[in-house]
Length: 365
Image 1 (cartoon, rainbow, N blue to C red):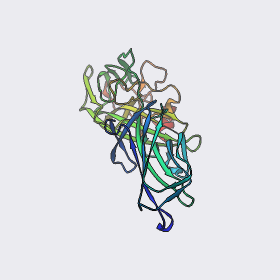
Image 2 (spheres, rainbow, N blue to C red):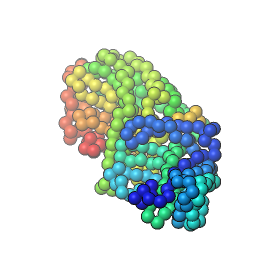
Image 3 (tube, rainbow, N blue to C red):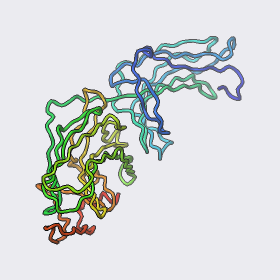
Image 4 (cartoon, one colour):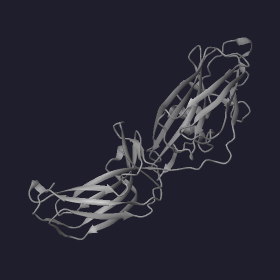
């Protein structure tokens, strides 16, 4: 609107050239709702028209230029005053002058680089948008149109199964296996849990999908952990030699691709948590890192392996939970605290000093 609503003003509308045929994708907004936006991929051209419609025909509209911008930016919710732009393209549509009637301006941004996935999280938002502006001396007339960008990952040629034996030494040995190591987001995780040794009275077992969002750097790092899904796979005490099947459908969950150090502002990671709960409500878990791809058949949800770099800092650990170590690995620890676990005797929970350094550090987060 013009200053004090006097004089001429105008409305701006941005229309894409392929609006009728371009696919739309759902994307979550800050208030948690989902809206549909035009979908683009890295390297695609963005073209269309900017319609400037005068509200008072016959009166002239003076301006200092008309332009359109293509912007990719990251907004941290705790620092809303600063928008970090990683893509900024500008096209001048008209030189300074005046408009006496409604006009339409064509624009085209050729093979635009869109390096990151659109994302709206608990503490950060990454968005792409077109912004058309009629520049004026006192106040500009602007209109923004958001778009959604998806990144793609190719399906790996090798997709071997995952097999690992974990547990508490001399007390609990579990072997879990997944049919493959990488999944796209519409896939199904199929596997099984095989009990090799059971000397703890287990009540039930579940698989959780944990989303971990990290924003900031150095001392100003914020971690947000969110449980996306809980899937109970066993109810009751297992016995030695028992096999529990796993079939987890991913299409029903709100997953996004894994994001690592996006523009050095934030990261998003997912973990698959295998949780066992005994009769005294003690929780034992093994956590696996999930590398997520976009939800297309040609993309994948990747390796089920804990990251080597900073593993302890990346694991999500609830206070009072105990991490199951690899039985055949270097990071084993004893939950029995020197007690005899044989013969079905009661297993005492370990004091915090006996937990591995990784677990203690993660729990403090």
